[in-house]
Every structure is written in C-alpha cells, then in structure tokens.
Length: 207
Image: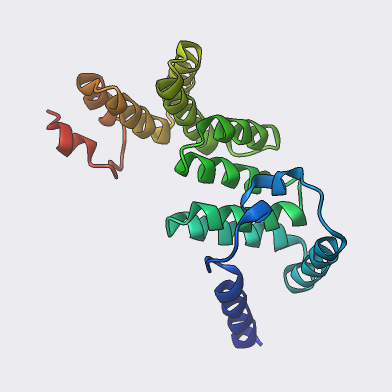
C-alpha cells in the first residue's frame, strides 16, 4: 500500500511537476482573474475532484510544493502554473500567494511580487520567513524605480527582524547592501548570517 502510494505520487509529479507546457493565463497568478470558457471551468472541477480524492485537505499544500520544486529548478513560469493549481484548490491558503511572490521576483516583476507578499502575510504566512523576502522585493523595486520610500521601508523591516534575532533577515540584508555596493555595511551584516550561501564574505574579502 505504501509503495503503491509512492508510485502514484511520483507519477503525478512527473506529469504535473515541472514539465514544460503552454503558457497563457496558466502562467498569470490567479489566472489573471480572466473569464474561462465552459470547457476550462469543467476541467478545473475535474482537477479539483481528482486532487482532493488523492490528497484530501492537503491537496493545496502538495501542489504548492510542486511549485517550490519548480522554483528550485529555476522554472518560475512553470512554478506559477503549480501555484495556480494550489490556489484553485484553496484560495485561503497563504502558500500559493507566497509562491507567486517568489516566482514574480525571479522574473524581475518586483511590483507584482510585493503585492503577493502582502497578501501572503495577510493570509497568515510565517512572518519570520516572508518579511525578509518581502523587504528584499521592496529594496530591488526601489533600485529600479528610484523609490526612496520603498527603500526606507525595506531597511526598517530588515533591521526590525534583525533586532528580533532573525538570521534570515541578516543574510538578506547583507545581500541587499551588495546591490548598492555598500560593501563595508554588507560585511558587518554578514557576520550575523549563519549560512552565507551567497559567499558574500568571500567575495567582499570581509575581515
């Protein structure tokens, strides 16, 4: 029984995971709230029934996980397709909104990314994880748009989280500082980051 379920999950992942497919409204968060044809609406209902029969109340979370797998595989557009399926299954779940935010950030659509980070937070997303990412989206948007208000908000959010002992905020703050070549500040910030995955300390030759 356990083996059969594992095979089923693997099969679903192969067909619904990060396989490339056509774009359109499927690659727009929340399907762009575009009107669907009767055939598409029927297909949605069949998908919902199938997913809930297989995964029950966990269906939305499982499809969100497919989206995160696509993010890790550097396929943000396909990830949006999976997060859309997660959203279709449960629009109150914060995870698809968080996923939309991350995927849009990967695509350089920072203003839209900010919008979805805010929804994810309102839906009860983990602030310790999401706020630093949200702040980085604000920072990157501020650099593109020369928006000093967004930049100030980003720094305030990051410093607030750092003062709470949020290690992730320290890592993201150090990275954000490198975007402006504030290398001395970045070196000070990276000292509070336990896992310098971006290799900032080495790149900047921090002492």
